[in-house]
Image (cartoon, rainbow, N blue to C red; front, side):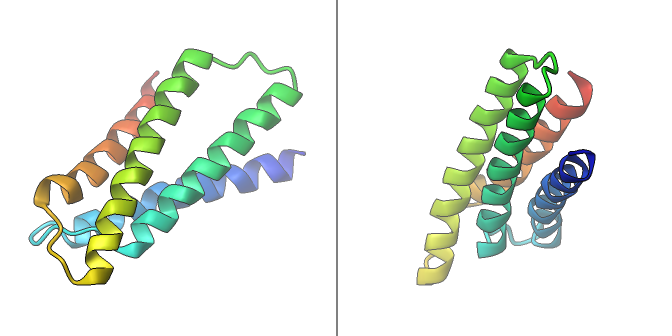
Length: 115
C-alpha cells in the first residue's frame, strides 16, 4: 500500500509540474496546451485516489482542505478543457484563461503544502 500511495503522490506532483511548466514556458504568449488539460485530469484522479487511500487507512483527513483543493482542481480542469479546445480549433486563448490555469495551479500547490 505504501508503494501505491508513493506512486500516486509522484503522479500527482508530476501533473502539477506539467501544468505549471507549460505555463512558465508560454508565459510571454500565454495559451493553454492540451497537455495541461491531461495533467489536470491526472491531478484530479490521483488526488481522489489518494484521499480514498487515506480514508481506507483511517487517516484523519481534513475534509475542508480536500473540498477546497477539489474545487480548485475542478476549476483548473474546466478552464484547461476550454483553453485546449480553443487551441485545437486555432482560436485565440485569452491571457486571463491561460494565466488562470497556471495561477490556480500554483494556489492549489500552496494550499497542499501550507495548510
